[in-house]
Length: 137
Image (tube, rainbow, N blue to C red; front, side, top):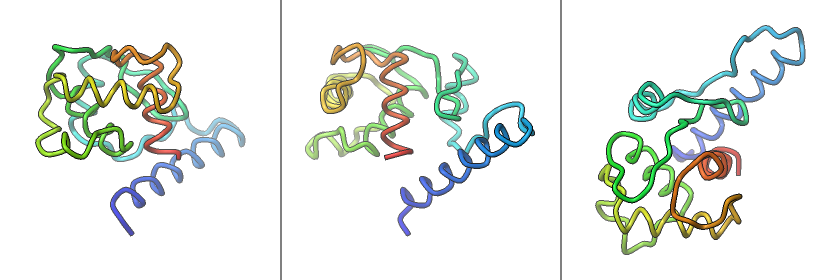
């Protein structure tokens, strides 16, 4: 089993547990969260998070010029989603929202008709669509 397949199974199992808990008496006060990387946790700690499809996602808005752990997490998710051109993949995850990241974001937004359009800005709807694509498709 690939890392991606194992990650998806873990996430789906967590979503099922959260749904069952909510259905059978609200045993959980917050949705289950899979084992995320330190970068995502640092991003959520710095900027806050909201729940979407039973998962915490960062509330930070990212665009050209952004940098840091949130951009690294975004870049990793864009790679997982297949939004990064093959020629841009080497060295793609660098924590800097430059032209390669912008192109990948626009490509991702166009490919899935992300609500809000393909503007190259990673806001709420792009985060939601990205999480749904990477973990639930």
